[in-house]
Length: 200
View (spheres, rainbow, N blue to C red):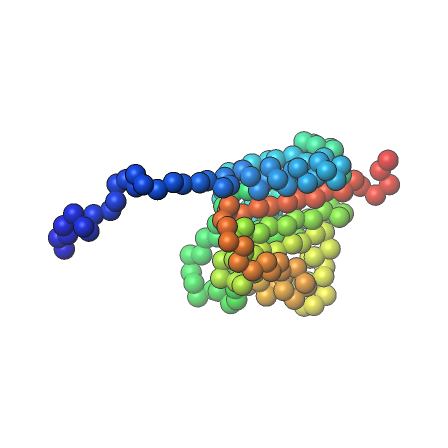
């Protein structure tokens, strides 16, 4: 198809003014300011988080255990912040049995490993208010979520395999609904790690 000058993509807008309201790191920066105001030590881990969502969840659960056990890279109680865009690879759509998205899969994966770290909690939300195919922004799980799901007869391993993390999270009250936020700064992840019981 041939198009004349009127069909060309505009190359310049000389009579327009643009304003950049927020940038990708801003969600972490503002979250850290809130932590500072609350007196909770906070560390921004990355504003460029990428990779498979379930791997990221396992990684953050492992970091939470390291923090609580050995105080690395920051002593508990503390908050770790990250933003970016994790993804979920689906090679075979026939295995899909429900709904979900990368943030939800990240928190479900976190819950499996975080059962070893008392009180550790991860929130992962899509800043625009919609995560994947679900109507929710993301999820929040902690060290008790794996057992809470099991008590309801729900396998978090199966939820990951079948990409039905929304249904699993919703059943234990761990799905996060914000509605449309009118902005998009990718995903925001907040990991809280308390000091171990009995610590002074």
